[in-house]
Image: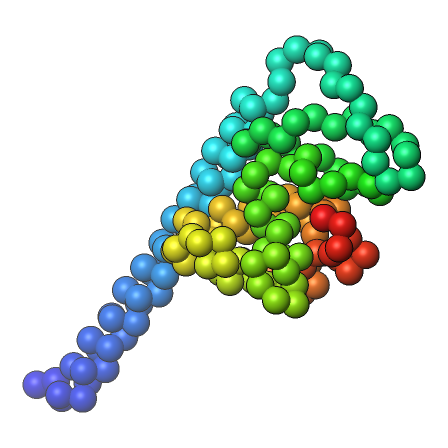
Length: 164
């Protein structure tokens, strides 16, 4: 006859194995979900790109230099940051992120993680919304608009905080 402790240990071992299997399955599902979020956003950007080769008149910025500036369109591609380029060329969602990080909606303009940023933007702190904000913040960082002070901690570089 098996001992009570032996039976409990056997059941504990089985439960731990099930938890580990479920955690692995969850990680796989989250990875697939993140790929779909990125794919959807990429397709939205591609579809939002202008089809024709319409000439946009240059805008004068900074030291009087002309810079090609397209009107901000929701879902439009984020241009690479360059001297004199204002955040107004960004799509509205990106402008809001820049405004919050520059201190427009929060005193000090300190670095924020994506959960804090989502809440400051008036979004629910649910994974789908936070990942959307993370994707946009990463894109702004890759294009030079934001700095990622530490992994997942975003801010507007000090030299651009006043002029974004």
